[in-house]
Structure formats: C-alpha cells, structure tokens
Image 1 (spheres, rainbow, N blue to C red):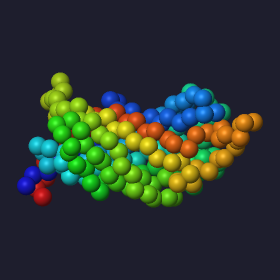
Image 2: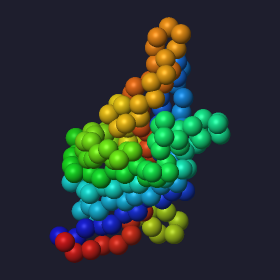
Image 3: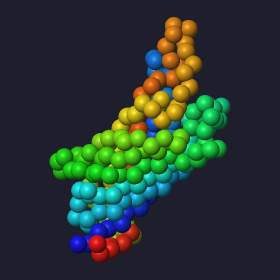
Length: 181
C-alpha cells in the first residue's frame, strides 16, 4: 500500500474561532500561525492520520487589548501553554464530501476527545504541478472543559463570555511525498 504525506499550506488556509460575547453577539478570532498535515492512502482520506498545532501567541481578534487578555492566564496562558494541539484517531467518510473527524484536542494542558465535521472540497493540481486537497472543518467544544474558566458575569447574571467555542478551519493541503506502508 502507498500512502501520501500532506502538509498544510498556511498561505491558503485559515483557522478561526467564534464565541458569544454578552450572550447577544458573536466575536470572531483567528490564529495567524499554525502548522499541520496528514498521512493518507493516496486515493482517499478515509482513516487518514491528521495532526495540527496552533501558535497561541498568534491569536488575532482585531483588538490588541483583547488579544493580550486572551494570551493571559485568564484564558489560554500562552506563556505556559504556547500551543493548541490536535491529533486524530479516526477520520471516517460519511459520503463523497462529508467526513467525521475524531481525535484529541490539547488546550491549556488538558487533553479531551473532540468530534469535528469535515467537508471535502476535492483535489486539484496547481500551476506548479502540486496536488492539493481542500477541507472545511467545523466543530464545537466547551471552554471550561479545557480550563478556560474566565467566569465574569453581566449585571443580569449571565456570562460575559459564552461557554461554547465554535472552531472553523479552511485547510488546503499539499501532497509532499509517497511512502510505502
């Protein structure tokens, strides 16, 4: 069997998160620096191994004061935990375009299982002859499960920052090499 190693193209990929603020609107942020890849059978991503790492210090919400606060111990504690990691343990095809991606998310020193939905955009060869694949990956997790315990309340007694974090990643992979398995 032949496998293909893939690497994330950061110039054509993005990783965002969304969370409620004051329970009335959504704040969007992104991580500007990340890396990752996959190893899969060259014809299909079924049961591919997927790994990803986000640089917490590259967080960007378009508000430098908020970014600084998010890097603090109140939230991500970037000094002690500079990376958010994901490693798959199951990548299963539902139909031609839909996959379920299960794995382990490590955030702030806590590792927990997570299930994500992945939509396969297909394969294409770029102008340099490199084979590429695209995915949009979406999922949710509870922030307090990972030690993000900032619990400030509004005057009405609701959380300033929502509990559920939505992840959205648009990822383009570049085939690197074929290896024998």
